[in-house]
Length: 420
Image (tube, rainbow, N blue to C red):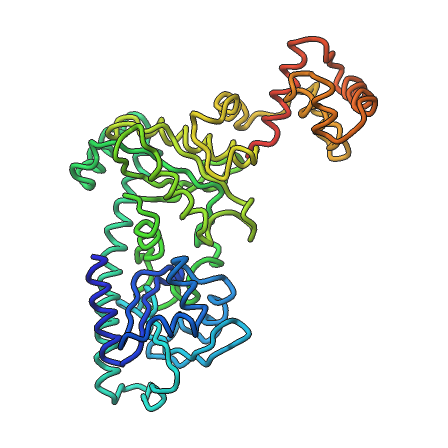
């Protein structure tokens, strides 16, 4: 299907005599076309197009600039002026890609002034523009069909991962039929946490959910994201994090169970999505990779592993931003024990906000196997300062740091307290 997009983008480029770029409604690149051999010059003259092609996505600032012109609500082509301050050195014509009232993406045409004579009003009087819009409509139909197929796969995957054991076999059979022969090959799951859905309206293309025909429509962004990330299926799984948060599950085909590299690549791409995390910082989300298996039989177990690895990477940044289940050490136990469990009563006073420094001191000391010299160096403090803080820890908790069981209890509770 990706080849069909490229053919239609090339058709639009040829019809209007301008380089064209196709992006989904989340501004992820799908295809781009050159015209007349001038593409290298166009790339040099327009950093936004360069970035979109090389990084496969536009920045949030560029997205906000274009959306301010009402592209998500537009029924007809729009002319957008250049903005050198934002790196947009050339004007653009935006062809909204729609199907049955839903915007699924945008075709962008670079305009250095040679398209100024085009009449963008409705009805379209210029046959070249009418041809281009007809091609954009065909793109919209393809994206809608892809979205429906992707949504169905995602629903089947979610059903398998969340179904009760009694109904799990039916969900597994349905997903196997939908995936075909690849369902019996080497597979794994990637978990991205936390994951923002479009329910709050902040990630959805503005106006997409309010327009005629949009109700109940599949999410074209999710379908395009799956294609960009190179995954077989993906779905949001609400309630999968402590506190009821949502994580994203992505099913990845592998060449062999011993080569999880494709899962790491998919995780990296998914972490760059605007929906990964709760803030505009790289540290706001992490991904986990479950142990590869053959077939779908153990997929719920793989999901538990991937989710635990993502939570561990969120808690311990040295493990991430992408962590494998096999590499998270004690968090393989802690992620299971900590869900919905309050901190141990003895350690709870140490977790109060005013004792953050003492808690970190105790954790580093225990990470260093109780070696005071190593711990003091890691903390950047004098050894006597370390001893003073550890004495305060013992006073607050009533634990004896010379006792192995007390040290184990303190260490595990401090680690578990940072999981989410």
